[in-house]
Length: 289
Image (cartoon, rainbow, N blue to C red; front, side, top):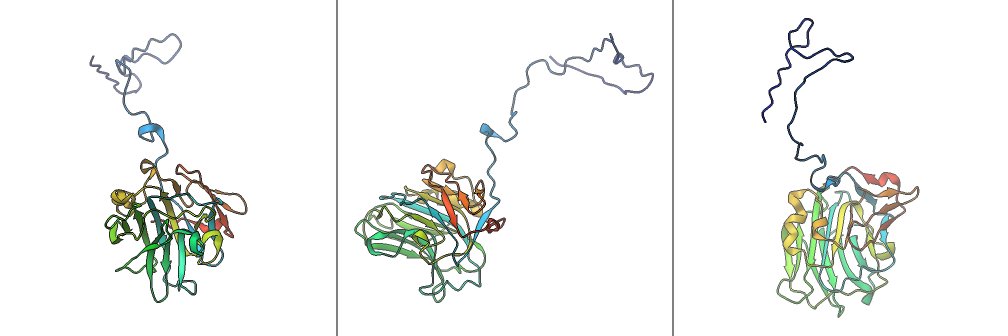
């Protein structure tokens, strides 16, 4: 029913029948609502989860800092997708011969022990590269064109491979735009078991270390080509949970400093936490895409 409440002024000698605020007073305020209120009572929105925010990234010095992910490969043998946000400073010369710096990889440069890699090649080249070594150990690579990677700006990299030799089954997106595509030389992804995932260096930190800032790194054992625009999200990192990544490291958000090293929580299904090597607490920075 409709309820009209005339509060009037709370002044001395008022004629509104509020009653006196003392013992045994009868105050007939009226009903504020004639049924139980319904609607959104959850201040964080649907489901009650914590809203997605991206506050931190990790800065690597290109000398001895990197992250180890476990002691074995992720075991990807079919389709693969690799995603990362990276910022390369203009003063970065590429870390010496052969001027390659690893963003994330399973690669120790040794024959059949190479699985896949996302990298930047510096002086004299200046391109991003997405590489897959196949089950027969041949390689398919796509190098970026038409952009300047070391411009001290954030770039989003997304490499996808559908696991087959179908036409243009391997693609490389830069900042949400298809930059290159190829037909793979063979099927599948090599998965040498002891070649573990490393962020910012070759497997196990064996050189080619990244000088730059990195954020929101994710790996899928599926082809996420059709979700490229969703992952890029118009240039702002977004919650990837609905896309079910195998591994997803937030690079500072929700991660912990243990006094001597960082632990990056794997927010994917794989449970592959990463541990920093030779990094300081101050290497977590608030510079984000």
